[in-house]
Figure 1 (cartoon, rainbow, N blue to C red):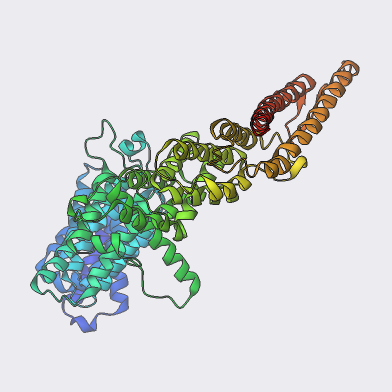
Figure 2: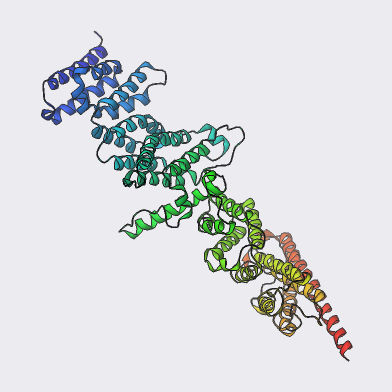
Length: 606
């Protein structure tokens, strides 16, 4: 007899011997040693490929009590063997049938802990495979539990989501189609796993309008909140050509359906501070929980208001302004993130809320909410610091959209705030151009506009028509702002006659000259002289440096440029001089216009 065959017979004989000894014992008399011997013998049978014989032992009615008490010990070796065999292997099929039998026959409490332990111990590429393999037996066991059912369901869902969370979320079309680790498939399997427990909550709520057993419902809310944060917050949720049923869109639909069915969707979207867990004694844990909750609620709003999941459930009674107010906190949360997948959701949510509104319909008191000031400042950061060009451009478009929605006083207040806080010449130049557009509307419309004419405008011009550090201001770094300011002043001088003085610019002309035009002229002369001297030095040094290394560094606007040749440095310096010439030409035109108009008025009065 071959040695391997004799070993297997020994393993089965050992198992049968243990079973025969235990058959005559009462349940209470089973010892720890019996459990160990049963596990070792059962594991040996599985590892040697004799799962079919083990299945017969488990299905034998005489062994029912033994399997009920000891069968859960086989979960770990059983899972290992299932993954060891190929899909079509008969031995794998026998192992799967054993798993199904154990779910039916074992003590639910013991098997529940065994299954959960197996999920907890899995890692890396086997996480999704293990979870999907054990979901069905885990569901069977949970449905049998009488005590602590809600707790056990919650523990199972939390364990599963904690194991899935470290896995990367497929983002591109190719990654979603490949689903290399099985995450897309696994997420939807977990939702199916939760459905009987959702149905149980729904049934109980239908029986009584005062549904008191909140534990299971709370566990399901926690699961939905975790799912919103991962994977949905970072998932690609746009419709993708060539993917008939987008797995994450399907998953999002299912999560929204759960929340709707347990009557929590509308409260979570519209009631502040919903979705918060009970207070933690440890403030660090409380902060983590708060952050998780805000991320989840932000994602929920994106799903409802951008992707329109579950939107048919909402009553159409909310004004666009109220919807914007409800979503501003969520928008702020998303815009503070740097990942493209999350940041883009924040921009889309903001844009979606703004597009619902009429221009000039957002009332200025909304700016008393701190978030209405924070969000445009976040947009400015994205516009100026984000490495992704498409995000920068979209942020600029949304900022303009936000400006357009405010009433006149709101625009005025927003402009003042952004001029003081943006700390970026390009953004300041953009805001000044917007101010010019509003002044133009004020001067061409029949109705009075007190915010962009008269003393309010003069107060705003004090911010606009000034140099941050007088004549010492870095003109190159501030060129966008300076050009926009000069263009605004030129417009005012041309458009507003001194006799009308609707804007008040002529009243404050002396101050403008003192704080803006004169220091600008001095600064231009100094800057041009400095750069011309630099160019002269470089040209002279180049003649001497032909025999040596011509590469060196140059500092522009206080920042050291990368090492470059003398020719490249000269190009940079000439470009700076061109900018100064451009500023000087507009400055000269403004001075000429002021002088011409002032002279004409003096002649009229003489």
